[in-house]
Length: 386
Image (cartoon, rainbow, N blue to C red; front, side, top):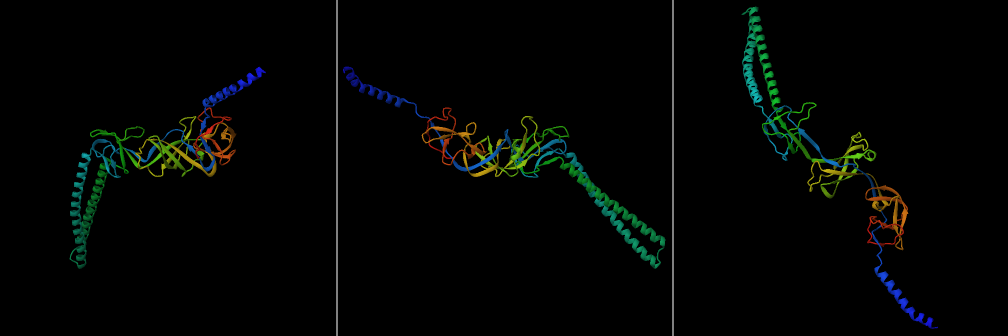
């Protein structure tokens, strides 16, 4: 009886110790992992293709210009970075010899015109004398031989007049040739734009590029009012692309902004520069040219071309998909359960769910924590909407 009495007296102390140990464990236990949850809801999903390597911003019009003829640079009318209008003079080569030749030809033409005036006046006088000779012949005042001499002289004078007039035409043609030669020594802007680069200096000899030999252009002119992105697309994705499809353009130099684009050209052939990565060049134009940003030709760019779009479908963040098309569903008891789903369209942001989930269910939105897996009890972070 004494042993039983002692056990009874020690029982409260044992229970008290267990409660203390339980309280210590509860206070020091590790907290449940907190996970971001996403509510499955309807929305829009667009399937798209992206470039395999960085694209490049290019100008719709860019010309590397050289004068049609070679010669010494006598005048540079523009500077790097200067804006010019179509037809404006950019560069002039030395042309004093051609200028002198043009002046000589113009003087010769003036002399020819004076001679024509003289010769044709004499021819007209001879024609009138021949007319009078025929009238006098009818009246019997002169012989038939006199009439013949008068008519022959009129014809000769008229021939001299025609020859002199042809000299005028020849002189005008020589002037046109001289002026054309001078125009070959003047380089003009074929379109409005900005001078990107100048490779020549005053006094240097500029040479046009002969066939098969590459020489630096005198002036590099860019029309930066019209820009587009040229990007390589993998040949596997090229079949999805059509002219006019919408696109999103991002630039490495302009962070955090996306620009609206539209497919304007698809190359009719596949590039074979890399045997294991063949691509098709696609050109995407800016729907509206960025005005607030300093958009420069040559920037690297990426394009995302949307080829299929579905609205009002169940969707989940693509980042929430596990390998094997599984997601972690948050149960009512706080325990995560893995579930296989069926998917449709997909992009980097969202994936369409065609089966395995219902609207309103919650899934783990981020899989960055390796400890978050099926069977683990968690506590939700504030839910976000897809």
